[in-house]
Image (tube, rainbow, N blue to C red; front, side):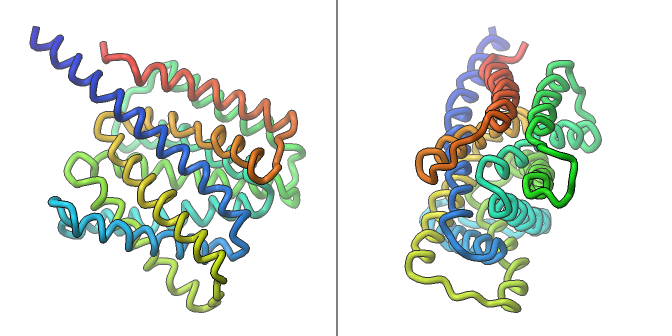
Length: 293
C-alpha cells in the first residue's frame, strides 16, 4: 500500500514538472528568434541576456523567502558553461537560420546519455540508445555536403557545441536542484555567465539602440529568467536524460515560430531531420509521463 502511494505521488509530481518543462522549452525556442531580431554580436546578446536575467532573478529572490543562498563554486563553473552554451547557440543561428541552429542544439540527448553513463554510472536501456540514434540521424539528414566552408555545416557545428554544453548543464543541475532553490541556481549561474563574458564585451563595446534594448529585456526576463527557473525546477521530479530529451521539442517550437514571425519556412531536408528528432521527443515524453515500474 505504501509503495502504491509513493508511486502515485511520484507520478503526480511528474505531470506538473512536464508541463513546466514544456513551457520552458517553448520560451527557449522563442529565444532563438532573437538571434535574428537583434543585430548585435552573439557575445553581446548573451551578455545582455545573462545580465538582465540575473537582475530579474535578484529581485525575485529578494522577495522570496528562500533568498539567494550561499555561493557554490559549482554554480560558477556552470555559469561559464552556460555562457559557452548560449554563445554557441546564437552563433549557430546567426550563421545560417533558426531551424539549423536549433536542430544542431538538439543533439544534446546523446551527450546527456554519454555523460550519465560516465559520470553517474547510469545504466542505459535500449530505448535510450534508440532515442539518441534518432537524434543523430536527424542531424545527419541536415548536412547538405561534408564541407567545412558550408554555412549549414558551420551552423550545425556551433549547434552541436551548444548541445554538448547544454548536456553538461543538465547533468550538473540535476544534482544541484535537489539541494538548492531553482531560482537561486539560475541567479548565480547567470551572474557568473555575465561575468565571464564581460571582458570580451569591454574589449569590443557595442551600443544597442532602444529597440535592441527592449528586445534584450524580453529575452533576459521572459526567455531566460523565467524559462531557466522553470527548466531547473522540473528536474526535481525528472531525470536529466528525460528532461533533456523532452527539451528537444525546442526546435519544433522554434521552427514553427520562425516560420510565422520570420518567414523562415523549412525545406524538405529540414522537415525530415526535425521529424526524426520529434519522434525521439514523443517517445521520451510518453515514457516520462508513466509511473516507474
